[in-house]
Image (tube, rainbow, N blue to C red; front, side, top):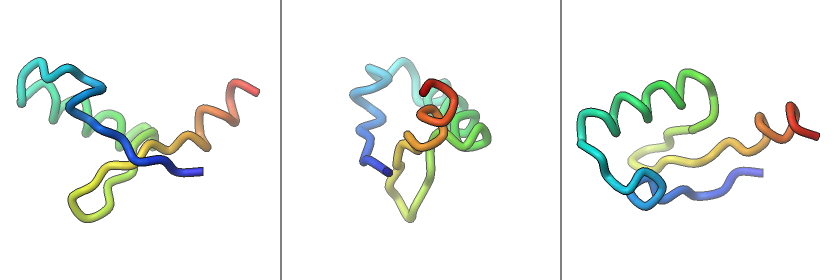
Length: 51
């Protein structure tokens, strides 16, 4: 299952630079999926590890 994510709300906007760095790390870890200009949480991955 993939759900839409409000990145700004989730991070409470620290700084744009920090935000982009963290987003890139999450994408590398496959926890966020970027599609066009939207980000989606890949909750499939965490579910595999925590169930």
